[in-house]
Image (cartoon, rainbow, N blue to C red; front, side):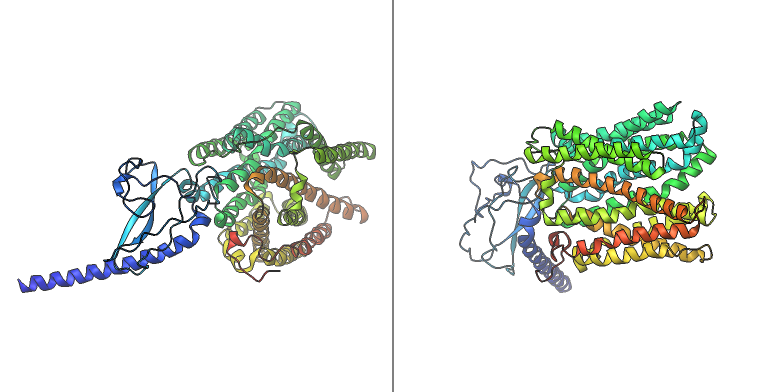
Length: 606
């Protein structure tokens, strides 16, 4: 009997020590919770259910206090701790309410009283757990699923980017099917780019009016429908119309998808979410050419478009299942005049750049196209100054972090457009490699982009946005300069290593630009910012292709040759390097602590 009592005492001591350890752990968690609650969790208002017998002020709930049934599947418990010692301490009066700064937006749910530390101290021997009830739809879903949301949006970006590059390898085969010259097939690429230029500026306003998730899902449906029609095309005019329809869906998918991510992700998770988002967009252009060659060789060029159908249907299901609806309560009027003027201006500029780089426009036609585009652009600027809510809001450039991200990111995106265009051509034309071998080597850049995903957040937390962007601009430019020294005699492993490093730093720089751009913007301007940012992004990607093609063509012409050699590609890569280096002084003007609430980086103020 005494032995049993002895073991019982030991057991009680063990349990007591465990309980004390647990209480101290809960106390530490409570301290962290009090410090960060107003920054990360919008508390639900309303009295505590009478089942718990507690009142928000700390005492017993009156019998008349209403409350939902407990437990309830529609609510999740958040734990607060209150001291409960032997002597009942004075009741702490509630402090003033403090609104949260995350979803739901301010005004949707009023904040409860901010409670001070318990009167008995955090090391009191006993604690009472009080549960506050919070709707799952308010914060739990976005906080838990931001990676899923990022991957859903990224799958749409992957489908769009891969489709744009995979088509280039199939143009000769498609031309034979339609009975036209391969040179005339470039209009199929141009139709898609023009559609993007026309409809991207309207994406933010449409998302505000009809809901971002609804527009994102409709955009996927339009893109998939356009892909099916492209696969069924039996003539070039039919293909051009289907590509224009496909571009309408693509114009809405990326900016609206990014808007969904902006409005459902906490600021401290945003860098990680953007890292997840960027990888498929960088993999798609690299994977496109070898995949297109494989499909054309072993199947049919029509499967280049049909492959989008299962990807799109999967994205549609996942968007319906995991993405919540977000929309602006007062979207304001739609700027129809601005939509027409900006659409004509951007379409003419992109159409002119695309065809000028291919050498299929006469000087007179080029002057007419660019003249019309510049005229409409001037008319739009005049219109935008007189309109309270223009389709492309240039007043966003007054925000320093957004302005510098647009300017620096535009220079960097010239590189992003040029590299996937030049590298496969260098491998096949300059080195004489097959399309499959070229695709395998250039895929090392995609592997570097994927490796960056886990490194972006620690790097930005350690060095901040400004330091990372400055040095990364230099290192990324150095990688491009090394591309100019590539020769067939290089060991194969060195090609993989260099392209891996280039893909890593290029992905990191775009993750940083895409994150810091929204660091100082209020939620009400996110939709306008995504439309503006994506428009410039698409314009500069096309500019990168055109400039690199022009540099390559100029080198060939000045050397008096008919075909490009390895040295001509070196000229093109060095031209792109010079443009990429211009981003470093732009990044030096970014404030030191810009976006520190996203990364956790802290440094002395400027």
